[in-house]
Structure formats: C-alpha cells, structure tokens
Image (cartoon, rainbow, N blue to C red):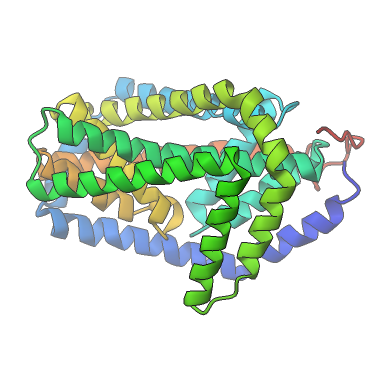
Length: 358
C-alpha cells in the first residue's frame, strides 16, 4: 500500500459528504420526475402504452441484455490496461464498475469517480505520474469516442436511407462539422506541442473575456507540458488495445440497445437505431443528472419518434436500456467497491507492500 494512502483517503472523505448524498437524491429525483412526468407529456403517450410494450420483455432477452452489458464492461478493461501498463483485467474491471457506480449515483460525479480511481490504482502500487498520464489518455479516448459516435450517426443520417425531418438533418450537418473539428483539434494537441500551446492560449483568452480566473487553464498547460511525452508514448504503445476496447464496448452496448428496441417493438432500420444511440451517448456528456438519468431517456425516445418509431415503443426502448445502464450495473459496482475496500483498499487488513509501476 502506498504511504500516501492515508492522505488520499482523507481527500476522498472530504469529497463524499452529506452534500453529495443530498445532491444524489435530488439528482435522482429530478431524473425520476423527467421520466415519470416528462416522457408521457413530451412524447404524447401514456404509461399504459409504455407498460404494454415493456411487457413484451421475456427472460431470455433480459438475460441476453445482461450478458451484453457485462461483456461491454469487460471490453473497456483493454482501454484502462492500455493507458496504465501493468494493470490486470480484474483490477481494470473493478475500477470500471466502481466509477460507473459513482457516475450513476452522483450528479456530475466524474470528480469523485476520478478520486476513487486514483485511490484504487495507488493502492495497487502505481505511481502518481503513471496514474495521471492514464487519466489524461482515457479521458481523451472517451471524449473522442463520444464525439466520434455522433459524427458517425450524423453521416449516416445525412447520407443514409433514413427519412428524417429537415430540421434534424440540418442539425446533424452542424453537429458533424463541429464534432469533426473537435476530434482533429484533440488529436493534434497530443501530437503537436505548437497546437497544444495555441489551444491553451485560446482557452486562457476566453477565460479572460468571460472574466474568469485563468489559473485552471495555466495548470492545464503545465500538466500537459509535464505529461506530453508520457502521453504520446502511451498512445503509441496502447493505441490498438485502447481503440479496439472502446469500439468493442460501444458495439456491445449498441447491441444491447438494438435488442431492447426490437424486444419492445421498435422496427426502425439499423441506421436509424445507430443515429438514436449516438444521440443518446452525446446527451450523457452534457446531462447534469446522475448518468444523465431522465435527460437521456426523454431525448433518445424523442429522437426515435422523429425517425419514425411509435411513442410508446420509443419510450419503452429508452427505459429498458436505462434499467441496464443505471440499475443492473449498480450491484457490480457495489461488489467491486467492497472487494477493493476490504482487500487492498483503506479497509483491508492485509495491505500489499508498495509496488510502484510506471
């Protein structure tokens, strides 16, 4: 166990306060209100119609969707292992399950998830420098993936056979252009010191125009400068494992989404479901409720309706996917957190000796 673990445990303790519990309850409550009241109102359907569609779920399809969820979580272990050499599949699976648990329970819980991930990796003996570089790389890969998915969805929507309203098509063109520019900029920042410096200076100027402190921007610049060589090395050595792991995860989760849609009676073509799923993933980036609960369900159901699905079946698809994304993953996260906490974590009796990796 790292000698810095007590201090890190205290830092985590300051994050996990009663205010986090209150915000979690309020966030979950807001998400529930959006689903219970907002979904029938916005989509012009009823809970009787939604319930009738959900009643079509059978044990076989439910088990298949659970299997696809677990397989998706396991695929992501290659992303974490590629960004943190020396990490095992089991450790990566624990970390992924725990951070997913936090993201589903706490609004804007990314910071707490990062704190937990740092604690877990430090308890396994990884150095701060290796962990911080891993965080930068995985954040970049997740950002690029969540931008790339909508770009792909936009291209399919514009060029494919889906008969979408012109407003949706125009929005897809704008979103595709913005997403492509964001991917190009993020990639160039990793490969070029000059581009990274320009971007950071631009952010600094924007912060000044908005009359906000530029200290965070300057810290970002210092962090990127310190970690750039290591990040580039991780990208070179782990590019294919991380990329294939990310592709595998999203492919399996889309298969879960497709299974949910077909189970409850959505008969849209494959391209339409890809577009709706990509839109859902984009919403998770901006939503402020735990895991985007409520916002993503109403939004993705609305997209399915715009693409031609029935309101009841579209709502049932969004809700069924949410059950797996928000609820089924929770027991895995609880078990993983308990396993780490009472194993090599702060609550463990038999602590491992420090093994600095990286």
